[in-house]
Each structure stands twice: as structure tokens, then as C-alpha cells.
Amino acid sequence: MKTYLVLWFNSNGALPSEVDRSLMSLGFKAVQGNFDYVYDWGDNVNLDDILRFTDKIQMTLQGSGVMFKTETVNGQL
Image (cartoon, rainbow, N blue to C red):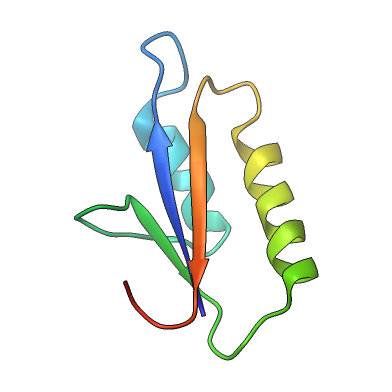
């Protein structure tokens, strides 16, 4: 399973390089294409784990002016 992350930055918010460091510390890897980052869960993961991880993303980005969208899929997009 993989969680893909798309970010929308605010010109009055945090620097993209600061956001990048914060997301990398959660285990995300930067990618190019339709998504900005990907988190690889390895094997299957349950919905509660996904929701808790999404909470961590929200807490990490809180106050940064960054909006985000996640998409978790089994396999690759």
C-alpha cells in the first residue's frame, strides 16, 4: 500500500524546503509527476493506521499555510 500526497502552498506560509524536511521526517519520499510525495506502507495497512497517519500529516502542516490531499492505494498509480 502507498499513500500519495499533493500539497498546495500559500505564498504567506512556510517555505517549501521547511515543509519538505518535515514530511521527510514522517517517512515520505519526494516524487515527480501527479503527486508530490509518497509513503510506502509495505504490506497491507488498515484504515485506522491510515487515519492516524493522516492526523500526523495534519499536525505537521498545521500553521504552515499548506493544504494537502492524500490518496492511499494498493499498488502503484
